[in-house]
Image 1: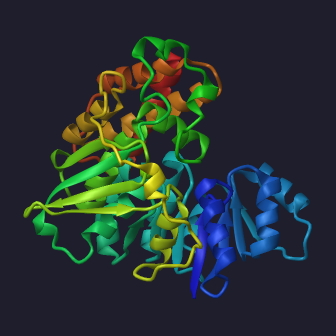
Image 2: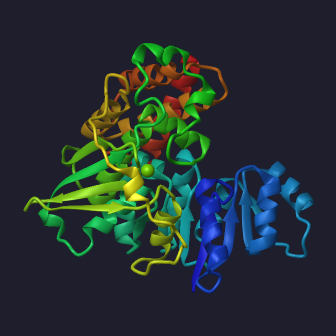
Length: 382
Ligand code: MG
């Protein structure tokens, strides 16, 4: 039996994880849950899964939750960063699924590591911001970080049974998002609705916009560098619109291992929670005959400069990845609030990265300072 704490349980990854728990109550037991908002839905999850501890965004939400909870089950209710950290290090849990969105995942990740909990990591921003610190701390505490991101889960699976020293290339696949075939001169008129309409994956709003700008792939490049201790030069991004090949690993003898599956996050989530066991998910295989062909193409970095931003951040390291991430978070939320246009997202990230004075080998407070600086910079430009 695995005892789980799920941070971000009302999001897309969190709800898929709870679907898996519901299918396999013999394998998983939920001990702690956290959600920022969405209190009505969260209270239903609490009634169903009966965690001992829950945490929400702030005191107001905590009061709202205690009013809304209907059933007899009354968990301890905490809030804010301290509450999330408590859930990430909660005594009776052994595995933490970190599925909250954005930079908010960093502190809870560090708390989980210090408490020596196994981490299933869906929050890529944690590694983008502070990959060196997080990975070093995990190593020091003997904590394994298992990827939930489908591409990184694929790479992790393709590395099994092989030697790391023989790897020469990582092929990171990308769906290409909804604007892969849209001419660049039409990008001005992209609406929020267009950008939220992802062709293959069904995900939360932030990551869906990140997919439309290809920034999601940019963040994933940095995530892969840290998770697998490789250089960005070893990574090639391939646009693969069918989203069946989730990524590939190339070896020095010319062999390439690919991991495939339907575009459903339950596969990667369950693997991170149960490997090397595979859980029965009653999943249909892709219909290869009706698919006909799996295609690959080079990403268009003229249209989507996000990949260039990420490679630059990898090259410079230090505080630049955190700055890129923070600028992107603020720009994406402004786009979601219809305060800026689609193309402004690229402009804001690029300008903020240019304006930043790089700090090498920052400690955690240096990273958080750079993150705050970038957020303010983007806000003032909006
Ligand atoms: Mg991904």
